[in-house]
Image (cartoon, rainbow, N blue to C red; front, top):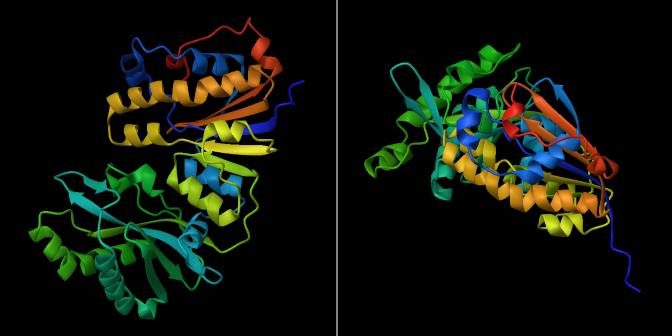
Length: 337
């Protein structure tokens, strides 16, 4: 007699920008076959909630008020005191009517340390300390909590940032500090050398994810996906990392989380071909195995969340819902608002 296969109770799946805006959706998806996505969506209970960025959803899932301390802990920093923000190095490209943000400028460890040393010397009276445990992941520690709403780097990437500056009671302070940071970086020897070598300059830091250190309270016991931020949050929270979706679905975990932000990254770059290719890949690598796991009884329930720029789409599906054949499949083009 065959041994009983393990069953996962619940899978929380987050796929930002699974749906494109209506004006782009029809052309981008023309001729694309996505039967498993269509089945999952059609058989689910669909609700439309106010917009929430992926980073906000991750904060909720991991039970923290800001992702910066969690990511910093995963990068090896002691974050027991103070208020922490991600301060990631970027290049602001000045154009006639826009200021475009190029993310993830590839610097070296030595360059990062030299730039941080200059920032720390200048901002000592402000009570700020800068850290660069990774050349592309920097942090700033403040002595007091801030009251400003800041746009995550992912949402600002490749966009005009003039409308994405900090908002809230402390916004003016962070605008001033941001201007000072840019002035310090602009003529720094590191950037002079990079410019001479034809490399992108590190002329600003993008601040986001602010929060004070707290004990994570994750609403999941296993996490996977292709999103580096999600995996670092899981690592810092002590949550299991199964490695791939098959291993996650084959486990007997109570609540699993799987995140894939590749479609959002493609959309942010304006690359509709990459979005289309990625969607086709996710049809085979995510939608199909999840649908099959539900139908075969190896997964009890699914929550699929699709953050877009205008809404958070939530789809709730149980194993029993899979057999509601009167809920006919519809193309993904019907879901954008």
